[in-house]
Every structure is written in C-alpha cells, then in structure tokens.
Length: 249
Image (cartoon, rainbow, N blue to C red; front, side, top):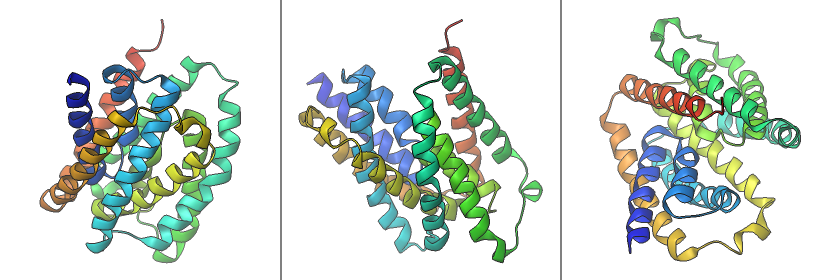
C-alpha cells in the first residue's frame, strides 16, 4: 500500500512538472522509481520513458489547443537531434560516469544562468533564421541528450528561450513535442526491456502523471511567462547542485 501511495504522489508531481514547465519529467521520474518504488536503474529509465511519453502527449494536446506549439520549429528541432543522439549515446558508454555527471550538472547550471538573464539581453534572431537555428540547436541538444542520458524538455525549454527567443509558454508547448518524439525514438530501441516492468505500480504512476499534466497546463496559463522561466531556472540550479554533491570525491 505504501508503494502504491508513493506511485500516485510521484506520478502527480512528474505530470505537474511536464504540464507546467514542458520538461523535467525524467529527472523526477527516474529517482522516484528507483528510491521510492525499488526499480533497478535500467528498468527505471525504460519505465520513465513510457511515463514521460504518455504524459507529454497528454500535455501536448492541451498546449496545442491553446496554440502554444510551434509545430514546424519543433519538428525540425526533434528531427535534427536523432542522429547526433545515437552517435553520442555510443560514446557515452566509454566515458566515466562521474565525468558525465559533472558535464550534465554544468550544462544545467549554464542553461539556468542564461534563463535568469533579463529578457532584453536574450538574442532575438530574425524570423527567417529560426528554422536553421532550430536545426542547429536540435542537433546540439540531441548530442547532449545522447551523451548525458537525459535532456528532453529539461534542456529544450532553455534552448528555445535563449537560442530562438521563444516566449516561455511557446517554449513549453513546443518542448513537449520534442520530448514526445525523443521518448518514442528511445523506446523503439528498448522494446525487450518493457517485459519485466511492474505494471501494478506503473499504471497508477502514469495515471496520476496524466492528471497532473492537466493541472500543470492550467498552472502555466495562470502564471506569467517570466515567473515560469525563473522557476524553471531555479529547478535547473537545484538539480545541478544535487548532482555535483553526488559525485564521488
């Protein structure tokens, strides 16, 4: 019973983050599955992809209805990252885990600092340059995602805000498109690993995550884009600090 309650609560928090911020689901889901529900790291990563995919698609629908999704840019962003992610993923297995952890924390911290800058300091590329910038940023984010194991909306939202000068709500909605595509692509290579998952815990986790995504979407419409951006940056800094603290001395 305690595990069921933990699954319900954790799922709600994951969904709220995805719906309101457009990312952060895997960063919250994986440790919850490991430390609260007893999943192995390999099973947790696969389970998190399934949960994040279902939740992201739900949140994407809500943001699309609110016209917060930039479909052309999001598709270019996602497509450009597929091959770099695969290549970087192959390289990641040859690098020390501590190095990858430090690199991920550094990327998170840099993204947070950029998002905390005043809006007037952010770049504003001309409209015609955005597809090319989206492809370049998507390839870079794909490489980071493959190398560091997570990424998705956690890195896509700040990239859309700082590189493409997206307003925060548009960045959140478009990020959910990228997260959905990346999760689906990653799951395509993990089909066999889904057989041993504990669906008795996965089902309530996913259910409350989907419900939480709707609450997060409503929260995003009530809170200003600047406040959402600052909240996201604070989350990034907290994650970076926790990851650095967990690196062996």
